[in-house]
Image (cartoon, rainbow, N blue to C red; front, top):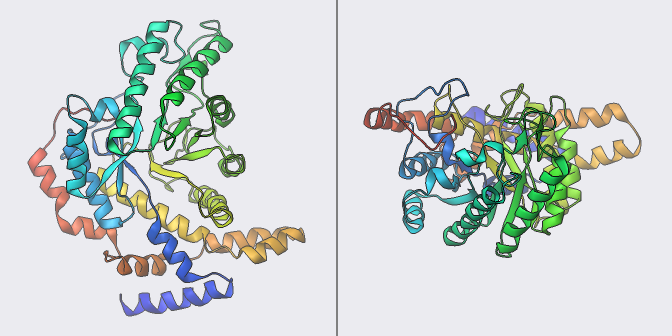
Length: 408
């Protein structure tokens, strides 16, 4: 560590001590941070208009896991890879995927059933009027539960494109009941150690209504299933201006927060790197998480990234996102909570806001530098990856290809 960083770290430690914050505790939590990256982020992705291909983009599960392993190698906090079943487990032995992942230094993370690409799902999957279509979706999700058993994954991540495009196209309540029945069937087949994360999305691809449109609907479906079914919060799946940190606090208090899909959004969708549009929002969300962790050290929340990079280099964008998550978590732990509680009790609104914003504007880079060095990592993950030459190597070896297993 350079002299300037060492001096900055000492100054930061003094600042945090003045706020009553245990630096060693903060460092321990940063070292224990655990964030999954998604297999599909390493494949070619695009928009509904076009997929722009990148040299070296992954196609096979081996390439996806190898690329994800680079992110873990340089950040130290991404030991698992979320998978999409029909993108990553087609015509392969599950044991082979598990062994290959292990061989490159990562494991299989959340299991994502793929119930939105087949022709049968044109009018929905688990909300479809045809029981045969619903059964196909349920059987695929049951297969996904079995994949979770075989891979050691304890998280079933569910997102559905179900909805309607026009008024009168189908009955809202009938569709709700179909969704309830299908989810309960899958839930009852899960092992006790597995969590079902039910993701919601305000709109798209249904232009009139989406069957699981917000956190309240996701919660109601979860309640009908059982205690291990919870809402999964994707940061980009809300109307503009929605107070996501308020939703997060409520879900935690109700015991119904399954986890996150980290990303960012300016308008409609969710494929921007975390913190690229509204870093303060991410900080305020982490504020609620840090507070909840302090109250319940055994709190289990799944942290996953859900991004499909189509203009940024894929591995670099993922490292950039992971770094942003680390910095955000660190800043949220810099809040002087004793002073904040006192100011809140006194209704000293100016001080309340200043105490929170003081943490947001704290430069935690020296702290992260120190943590990474203590973990045996390069303090600058992105530059270290660039210097390693991996991107140039896969670009030359793989080139530009017709690919699958991504969003396009």
